[in-house]
Image (cartoon, rainbow, N blue to C red; front, side, top):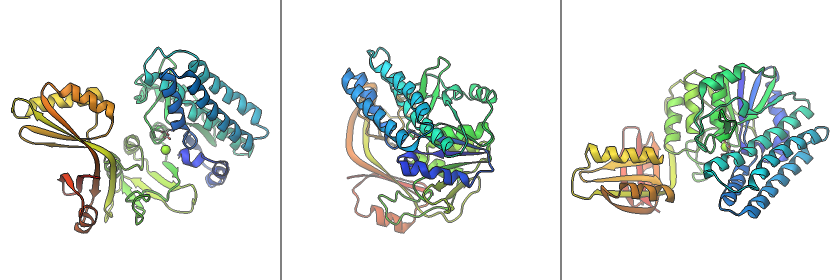
Length: 417
Ligand code: ASP
Ligand code: MG
């Protein structure tokens, strides 16, 4: 059995959806589980619906949702004939779930509503893709992943309950050829919808691969495979043909937008190889990620934009030592803050974070008793793994560097933009 993941870009147009049968045809003798994301930028659009609703702008949220409905309806109309009516009836069920909620007043926390609204992106896309594939003779079953993938109720960043999910999966019979289901979403034991964090479909695919002992996971993307830098910023970015799980975890940790960071563990734990391949040109080999360690990797470059550096200074001139650091780390855990870089000195600490105003305000007010705090904005964090002298020279030569850290494998530099 193989698990496939099709991201939002692979289903963002009629042509791209119509291209899926040709990809699947190459695997027609295999049993496939196919995880699909919401189409194109639907998740962003649904986020806006949730925000407007929660801010009390009911009419605005309804009208934004109306646009999303129409887009999906049109897509279904263009793709389907025989199955259009039954697909549309299903879509209407999802529309109604959301509209019913939008007509109410928000009584619970934002993250709860976010998940109830945003989850329909994946439900709508899989409904259309499954109906389309059945119509063109690629037989499949559509599975509502919320009946299988059980999570806690930490909305927007839900944690999967592996035991329950495995038990649920045992109770169903998968289609002998193709089962289609949603990435990114799950459900609590109270049947409330949850999401696993943005870009979480990769992770969903890895969960299925792990629990089903799949022979491999393939993530189909609109790029050739994993590159050593973002080709949008670095025109000389190169394909990396093989990577170890460890290297990919490191890359994702430093902010490379290749694969959701949580994807690797479920695969590594069962030695399941991960292929990253182009759905535009399936004959390209792409990248294989496995246990095998690689030699001669090119420098891998990751740029994180919109960073801030928080300077914390102990108020009474006492050393930062264990106690104040313990307090700080406790605050990070409570506020779910993930520092990108930390530098400690005798009486000061510097912390580099993504510029999330809400988090920074919370952190500042929680740490203000112990520290004097200054926030420096408009910074960029560059990480180079497997650096060479030349690449450091080339990328950092004229930068106004504020903080730099270096290990044998990795160099990180924070500079003003
Ligand atoms: N649709 C979700 C997102 O855009 C999940 C995913 O695509 O992985 O974040
Ligand atoms: Mg994606």
